[in-house]
Length: 154
Image (cartoon, rainbow, N blue to C red; front, side, top):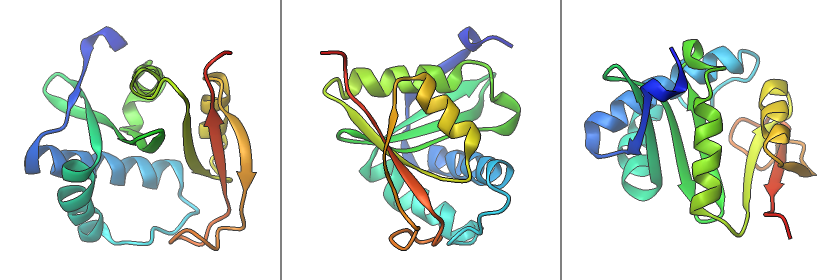
């Protein structure tokens, strides 16, 4: 399956929220098996239903009628970017980052856990640089993290 068979669209309503939460849960557990989630499955589902979809600019990646990825944006910041584990490496994340750059042409930032090496390589490939590392005391998981920033070419 190529990335051209994947459609990106804005999330809309509780059905999207439920599907996005399921992608987030599968992706998080696959990518971060050593990082204990701060919230159980139902807490994550509620967060997507009551916060992510209604309050953030949330995007859906859809293929064959199934939700296979998601990205949530705040002004100048990627809040969430997760892909279904079986849809990684197909260019969907690249498309999401390009969309985020188009939506925030003045620059972007995001946070990633320090243990997430694949994410670090992905963001570096897209021109993000590590700007800050923390001990994790400010995030719910208490996991060391890193803030990445992207600035457009001068």
